[in-house]
Figure 1 (cartoon, rainbow, N blue to C red):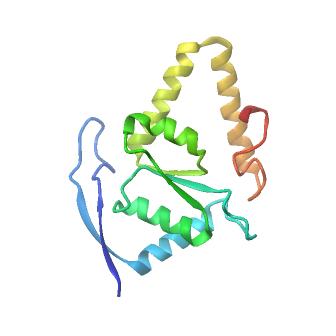
Figure 2 (cartoon, rainbow, N blue to C red; figure 1 turned 60 degrees about the horizontal axis):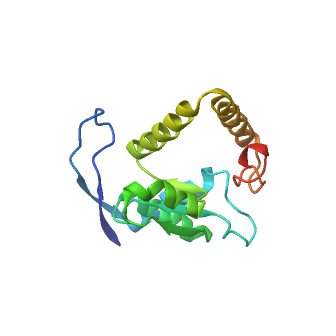
Length: 163
């Protein structure tokens, strides 16, 4: 049995404004293979053909983080590319924009921070920009829910809002 030692940051389920205690986690390789296989099964982006390098996983978490490791293992299993951030959390959004990932493995606090940053920029512009942004988000979510795997919309490409 192959066993790996990982850590979690301790942020899951912790009240806003507080920090959790990082925890060591011992997991078997089999557990990660099962987790990665589950990702592949539920993601609408799995590929049945041999051209899978169009997908990219963006990772800013250290590989020793349990969630990052499982995401990267999934990417390796299906032949996706893995991109890593430059090392500065201040540049994480620009890193993601340059990479153009299909998936970003992240923790809830980072997702909330990115969302707040985007919403603040949109709210600051207001007016027609805010209205068009809200229309774009609703339209894209609706299209993604209907999309079949490997269609341009499911791959994050296509549609007037992407332009």
